[in-house]
Length: 135
Image 1 (cartoon, rainbow, N blue to C red):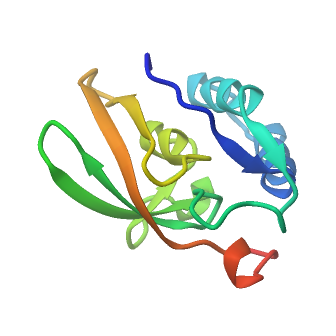
Image 2 (cartoon, rainbow, N blue to C red):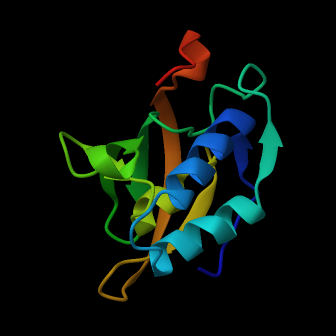
């Protein structure tokens, strides 16, 4: 990805994601890519995260710029990925959304190699903004 805006991740999400990565049976390229994303993140406490940032279990509305297609997805852990509009944080689009703020764009490469540009339009639901820290 050539366009990598600053991202913000809660320390609690970081701890949970590190634990998830440590428990993977198959530590593959997706796990390495997530590690790289986390390495470049700014970290804040879970009570200090702005409500317009995508955190784990957030529901986000974003646009794919070349097609002008709008999407709503919930950023999830791998076990929930692909269920009812949930996308795994280990999927390229999940990694692209993690830590983005409303208005930011990021280049994303599909599994088939097509370059897309995603722009975050709205965080519809963020657990931290609702005082929900155990999801």
